[in-house]
Length: 198
Image (cartoon, rainbow, N blue to C red; front, side, top):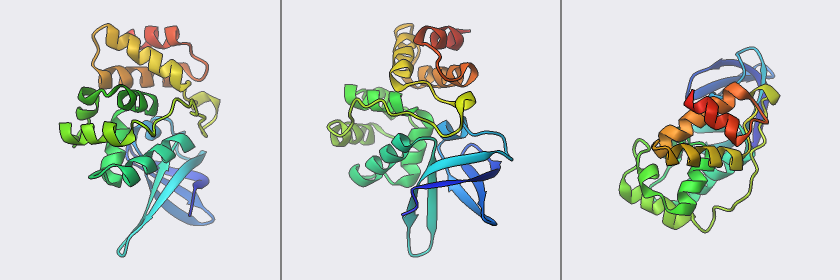
């Protein structure tokens, strides 16, 4: 099993990255939340990966952190009707802390707003993953300090504050992700909220 890939980032789109290693260019499917943290092409990148082998294809999926990769595995292995493509879509819409929080709290509405997710799939995510989603804060990233993500609890608290101000869950999550990228690692919850509102 290939658990990570590190090499030269030669190209990237919101859903794909090309990583060159030992003369080979590997196409890696990534969620938007990982694409947001990628360095510029020409820089070294490390992605935590999951490979899916089928008769007609081998597909590589990559994530900024091992925790995100593990959550992707959790979804495709435990939730009926959620395959790799749908799992990637879900993880593109919500950052991991918000996703785990929505599952823990049984927030069907936030989950159902992900493209391709209806109310039934959102309910299955909650029912089948609630017991498996712990409160671990493991969000170390591999792209260096400049693009490092803030901690999950900081992210969660900032999203919760924006939701209290009337933001929808997914919109609050996206605003906090943008603020975290702009402010870099070590941003406090208060700084993230201010930046997201500016």
